[in-house]
Image 1 (cartoon, rainbow, N blue to C red):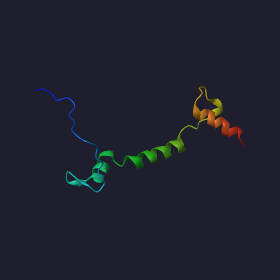
Image 2 (tube, rainbow, N blue to C red):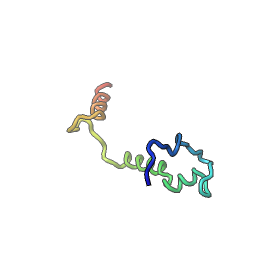
Image 3 (spheres, rainbow, N blue to C red):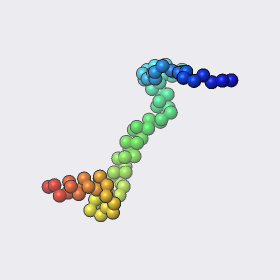
Image 4 (cartoon, one colour):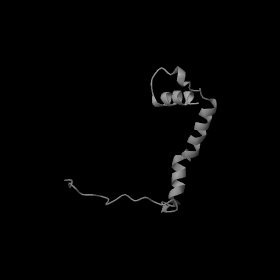
Length: 78
């Protein structure tokens, strides 16, 4: 079998709406089932990390990065 060069299977990508039917359910239902509503889960993890995680002290940073620089500038800007 010889493959054809330059053949395109799709002319352009298509984005499905959330209410579009797909294999017996809507696209939104499939998205929620496959991702497990990951957006809300990640938002909850972020909140828990901010509440219970270690606090960052820019004055004790051993490496230079943008967050350290911004923190030091904000601390002295008062």
